[in-house]
Image (cartoon, rainbow, N blue to C red):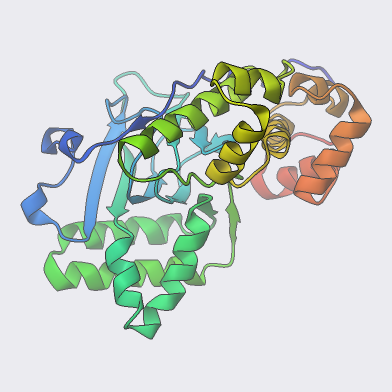
Length: 319
């Protein structure tokens, strides 16, 4: 087995941008505000000004219909292909970068539905049937990838896009019911962005994303919490509390999770030896790598590669 087959570079990610309401121009494919209520539909291609690492206050249900490449959802990096269906929660950074775009671009790559949390939460307090949807939305704060629903999702999107008023709302809830009842899914990001509202909250999210960028962009380099805390002008204890409050993880656990997620990507997309991947993602010994991998994923790296080969057809044998 060689160590070069199918090795691909991962695009370097910028700090995510907060998508503002005023940026949702109809010229970019957004529906005009007077046409929508709770649910907004969007279709766009690649390349597009909309393809950037960003986050917003809305949930975003994202269906890829053309091309394949790399998806970035919170701290998760992984492959996508046509039929890739993901529900992202509020303030969870995300982006999809196509790597096999035909000459002239891919005009119809994305089908998107965006909606707000508060109206559904208020309605669920009075309508018991919506509690199932609330459970789905809680999971979405990690990002959910659904399997085996691509054609169904395309049909739902087309129907919702063509409808208005209460009929659109009814079709949207039917789609949510199908997603809530889907049992073939996985949660993607170990990070739940929990930034507060307002400018102070945005500044905190920017600080956290600066740290996330440093970890993900310099995977193999050692990173000490004391150094990061000093750069942000915080004591270690204050930074530790701040980081856990913002991400739901301790700094060390977060670094380990990011590195293990990157290892999963390499296990699925390359034929690199497990021992090589260990060092590529920043672990300094194989025993610790295997222990952390088992702790986070519930299986060994070799078992993960075998399961990925079976499920996703990567064609890569275990090592």
